[in-house]
Amino acid sequence: MNFITNQLVDTYNTYKDFMEVEFVPWGRTRYEPDGSMWCQFNHVGHDCFANRLHRCVLDHLRGDQDAQVEYMACEFAPPYPAFQHRSYACVQSAGLPVVPIDHCVDSSGQDLDDAAQAAAAEPMQIINFVPSIHFNDVIDRSVHDQARRRLKSMICFALAEDSSTGVTDCQI
Image 1 (tube, one colour):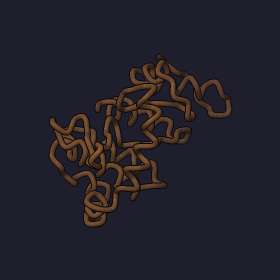
Image 2 (image 1 turned 90 degrees about the horizontal axis):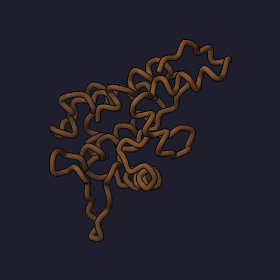
Image 3 (image 1 turned 120 degrees about the vertical axis):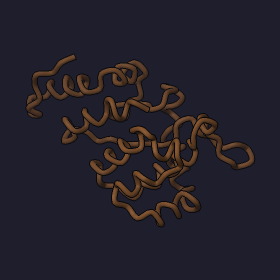
């Protein structure tokens, strides 16, 4: 959970003009044969609820990457509102109306579930880690492992290779 607050937010704030971030709140979730949803960490928190809430909010914030990153930073900072408390606190912080989000969570989020399940399938097969981090639609375990530890420097060095970005002075 610390990747978003410890790596992504700072990197995004520095390089957001060059980044496109896609959140896929699915993780190690799966549908059971009876149609119910199983979430790996549901026993320690409210993982299925939190994932559905994140999908609904991110859908409402579609097209506003700054708002999406800010929302996810809120959710993944202590006290982890949705995950540990089934709270809509970050929804309110994002300035969204709670009623349509709650409606999505309770009833109309199935299409979002299906899209997230499809988007997460290949990264989970290859990387098998949450969050899965990949660049330019290339799913690579070694790149993912490096990005988990030093996302900002990886992006800086990649941008520095293109002089038109104006990015220099990268550090490992």
